[in-house]
Picture 1 (cartoon, helix red, strand yellow):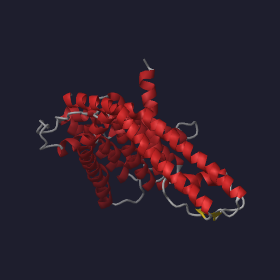
Picture 2 (tube, rainbow, N blue to C red):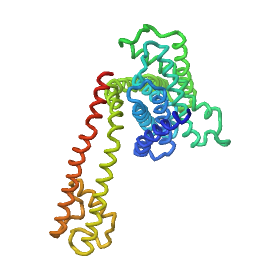
Picture 3 (cartoon, rainbow, N blue to C red):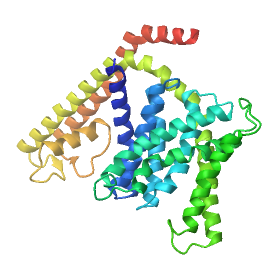
Picture 4 (cartoon, helix red, strand yellow):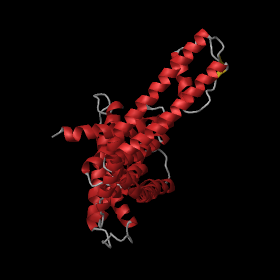
Length: 363
């Protein structure tokens, strides 16, 4: 029973990490910042995919997790050292803006608050690995402030739910005309707390009143509102395309074996001719121009790969008649393999693809 959830979650987490980790290191060299972005992306991606209701299945979780993870890594990289307070609101707002891809119909503040709370819990879980890596829960680094850091996204839930609800007025599905009183009161708490911490110098020493007003306005309202709108606009455009990915899964199941067969044959041709090229150069020195004296199988595999693609290799080129003939035969076989195998595969799987198309047309 658990394996039905564990293995898809592991696959989604690995895919999100492959996207977010290189992006994070392109922005910052701090491992904890990259871990922060990866953790947030993995948590949101796995949560969205396993909750169900999304049109693209696990691909939806991978996409949403990658977007959230890259946004988290970007914010963490731009604000190294102490980005926690500034990371929560925009990333949470972006996550809420992307909720629509899961198929959620948000028609009121109650549904918006629920989805915002769930997103905040996922972000809190995603922040834990980075906090542990930074030593915030060690005996030396433990404090009340550090203990509260993982739940900071939850603190922003009322503000983000209120902001998202106000920006959703006018949509066809939205039915509420005014926010609940409890939500308004809850939204006042984090704003008042931020003002208090700025005014008392707990976040920044010597800050002035106008700087406090600008900081609160930007960090709690303007930037999160922009993030929410960007997420909603992005998912509005992506949602119909995700349905296409969901339908392609049936086709890929049919074509998986032929694709593997094509790859095996193509790689066999590359390896075979890499040996031919190396042997020709060894017994007929000078057959290829630009070959170094210590050229090995790796060099010939690279040359054979580029030749199979019909591309010129940067350093090696055929010089003798025998080398040119060998390259020509290689090109003919590679192109022939593509054409012949494609025709054979389409003849073989054509009826299966037609049945899938008819079934999806009926659905």
